Image (cartoon, rainbow, N blue to C red; front, side):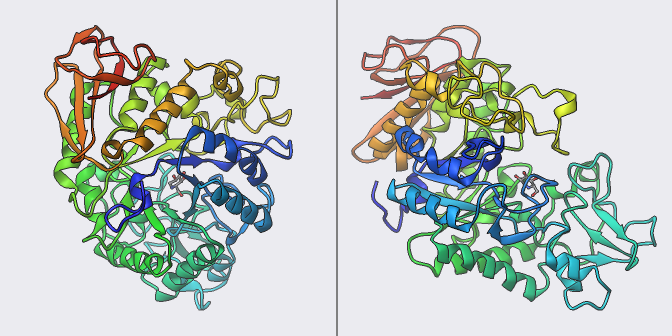
Length: 512
Ligand code: NOJ
């Protein structure tokens, strides 16, 4: 679909998340790299996605595997260098793939020169770039906020030399930046300019809802006080800061996008981050990512999205998996049929879908032995290397940084590409069907009445129409629908009239 003011590319695109450490290893050191990603761009073009989101590849001591950034404007040597990034970007663009990079504005690494300066003394000019408080002395933090990924840990650490606490909503190695300081805002704007000038198509903005904080730092109250503070942080100043990010990005030509990670408890919390069409272009909504395999639960979430997102300004997003949670096939107890049906749902809802590399192979999480566990947040399983080939090392160096997911040979890209019945081919057919159908890309959506345990929706424009039905129950269900099966999650009957019954854990796309 062509761009139009009402329908820019990021509304009709499917975005594919690449976690650079785990994607493809060109230099054989067992860790993925930018050259590896570049070498696999033709595979992504063949698959049919429209854009890539690259998780952080910046200089980092890797306490949080790259989300602790020590230099926002350079590539970590583990992944390559700026020249490799430029080549990757040029090749992606030549293949018609847009590239969105991660922006991590809430915190830096403890090793970032800004923090190194800030902690030199209370009088350092950079001191106020971070959030410092006296609390009640070395044993009593300023409030009860909890940090993420630290069991029972406070979101504050005591800095002995300068005798103050600093805030970190994540690890102690990730001090929070002080967005109330205009110099910080300008510094992050400069980071954005650096990448926009290089030609990126936008930013995925890490925990963007966390950047504005209540100036009096009140205690969290139950039930939020039992959870990391980042899951509930809310302050009006965040919206002002996001409007500033939006103005900056919109000042560049070419419809650059900002998609914010608004990892909040539900759609009601996410909706305000679109503003009046002047904040995020897209806000992550993890409704389906957290939904159990249950038709009523999915229906409820879809209804909430239709009800709460302004249809003119707030275009929804859909996510089943990412680098922070177990893969959806793992969440569905390994059922391939469920993972397939969920893919049909993901790619046919009204909104922009985000795929996580490897879901198109139907991967499950790796089983990581205790002595190989690395991530403080327990997220190693979903970050296992992508098995590309059928040989012993699946296209990687001999010692990959994490073990491969189960059945790596059978689920490798090489095996599945040769098998038209594979999950990989299902994704490819779905992506092609979506690209060919204005109704699926941009049409309105109406939920339809379907039997208990099932779900269905109609997508339509004035000239195009698709109906999607999905059986999430344990038995076959008759459906009162007609049409030609364009896509079937288990692959049977495509091109034939719908036979009137859906098998368990099965979804189809019907065309008139
Ligand atoms: C959200 C990212 O997705 C996650 O991987 C990271 O650990 C936190 N933000 C902190 O940056």
